[in-house]
Amino acid sequence: METENPRTITEALAADHRRLENLRERAEDALRTGGGGEAARLFAEFDRGLRHHIRVEEELLFPALERDGGVRRDFGPIGVMLAEHRAIEGLLERLAREFSGQAADDTPGAPMGQLSAMLKAHDAKEEMVLYPMADRTIAGAERESIVARIRTE
Image (cartoon, rainbow, N blue to C red; front, side, top):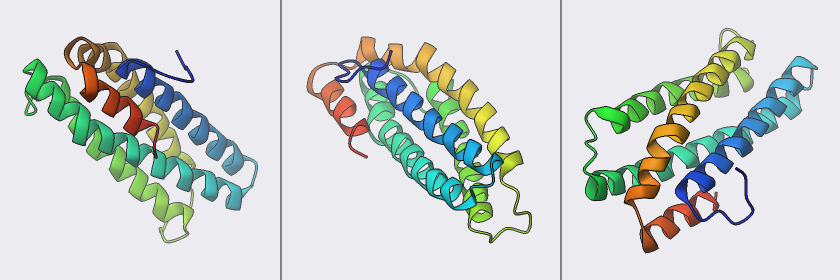
């Protein structure tokens, strides 16, 4: 599904999921092999990228789905994604403290595993339900804007 020049929302956002998954896996590998500095650097890059991804969805994709697709924010797929975004951000904040040594428990391995499992389920829902819905609903310049913005972290 990864493509150099994605044209659909599904292609662009799913490719970003793969990019972020790769960064997270590299951070986990560095953590397991004792590369604390490299793990922290990779995690910081992953954290920035994932927060950008969430912003694009919440600032561009979700409002367009509400407006053009009649999808309500307070329940249904957007409501579920928003709740999951808050849970993901909570884990990101915990991990950032642990990677910086500011947490009581300086072992990022457990929350990294939780984040990995959460993202796997979250990404699957987005790629199977939300993004195809967006591709059917959002067209033209608005679609191009979402695709372009996800690529400009």
